[in-house]
Amino acid sequence: MMHQHRQLGTGIGWRPEIAAGIEQLPGIDWVEVVAENLGPDHLPPPLTRLRDRGVTVVPHGVGLGLGGAERPDPGRLVALARRAELTGAPLVTEHIAFVRAGGPLTGSPRVEAGHLLPVPRTRDALDVLCANVHIAQDALPVPLALENIAALFSWPDDEFTEGEFLSELVERTGVELLIDVANLHTNHVNRGEDPADALDRLPLEAIAYVHVAGGVEHDGVWHDSHAHPVTEPVLQVLRELCARVSPPGVLLERDEDFPPIAELAAELDAIGRVVDGAREVVRA
Image 1 (cartoon, one colour):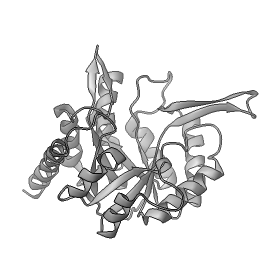
Image 2: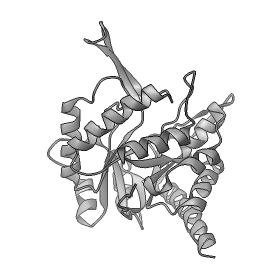
Image 3: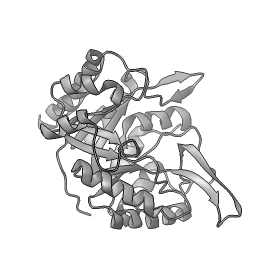
Image 4: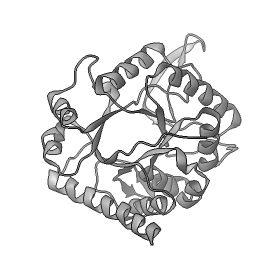
């Protein structure tokens, strides 16, 4: 399956709390913004300034729930498509997750989880996910990439590993992948899954870009907090990925407890050294 690679470069998750600092960061090629936090017809002035100077803006959705049993909500798809057009984005991204359940078809109240919940790695769940992805792709004006999530638990009776599930998803839908190396590390600590095994099974040519984020371990559980510095184990998963493929883009996520912008710049430098170091090894 052929994927059209676009070189995004080095990016950071755009958040209003650090908007001023992001404008001052050197070497930022692109930013990712939570799609649901954007208005339908205008961008915040700092994002407009970034876009006007050539920084790519990518909407990152959190509310579609493509892994849920119901078909994607048409209103949510229209909203995401509008954000893609508003930002002039080359792609949009979402998660391999479900976020709601219940409703009229089930006879039970609708429940919004407020959290990204893992999709069972079964043939039936994959069938539903693929159908929903096709619907989303048809509704969007640009390609869609989906992110592997972090999970605190596994559903029983898995029929696929993470790598097998993602590979089958790509084969059946042509969707691109947003690989979060922090989430692979989270699943290593919390679910005993080997990141290298997942990477070995991934269709690497489908990777649109990569997320890197910080977290913290408490009592043997890894919390994908996006509120702590990026750790060496997460950078090691990034090294493993970059040893296999040169990712078109790498992005640093931070969602709260924002440090001084100089600390984020240092984290971006550390990420850049990993990516550049892997490229040097490949060239050698």
